Length: 257
Image (cartoon, rainbow, N blue to C red):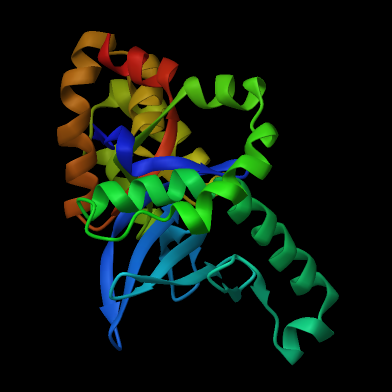
């Protein structure tokens, strides 16, 4: 578990996104961002994926627009180089999709400057500085960023971590009861309840539950948790997936104490 570099992270409306990397398709460069919010992967229910992906599109150094893929809806919308929504006939006929697309248009305009700063940093300035395209829009939406939102973001940190879901629910409870320590049983049962309720559990939440509920004591539990969770993954009880998500700084501090 480690913190994602600050320069890779920026706001997108009421969410935060992070720069994931660059891909090239049909001579088009896509600077890809993902939200820190995750959902169940519809193609693989045992896994999770980022709820929304954003591609900032270039052809060479020419900015071509933005494509947003909402996997939860699902919906894919595209915006031109002036951040105007490109609405096709099917979108115009669906009022709910159109409302969501307009919401993304507003979020995009409010996050323009921050997103492009990340792009500039990621490409070492090789993409032309977009003053004529972006700075006027950024100034228009500057007043939308309030101190309350900044304070809320300051309480969290974006980290690369892991999430766990059931691969075999029955095996999870069997191993917890019969192969792991008796003093840890209630902790594993609580972790199981969280997975049942939410579909998955973050590593930091599982570790906090384990440290606080294990009868072995906090210090011993902190040291044994990595081996225990690895045992459950390797023996087919849990799925493990790398994710990037926002975590309360307070939780990080409690795990490290």
